[in-house]
Length: 109
Image 1 (spheres, one colour):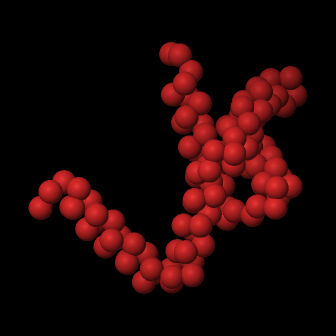
Image 2 (cartoon, rainbow, N blue to C red; image 1 turned 135 degrees about the vertical axis):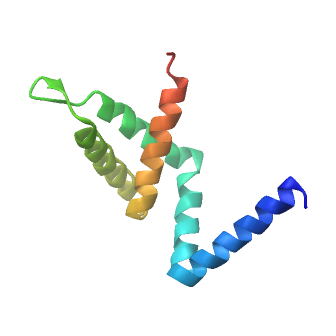
């Protein structure tokens, strides 16, 4: 079995398992949300929100991570809603994490 065919088989098995656990409708909705998230014009919403949250201060000092995450989450949901897009909470959280890691990878050490 080749490397590629192995991962295709694993992917199929995982997908089938998730369909059994959550149902086809939930998996289809998640896949649709994920495709929306990965569109470049939508992902900009996430990176903008994360960058804005990085500058957040509370009482004159830098906000903690939970406050920054909450601010980014609220901004993303608001901005997407203004575009007529609604994503599930887990997809928004995943998008924020992807944006944080992307921005960290672009920041010189």
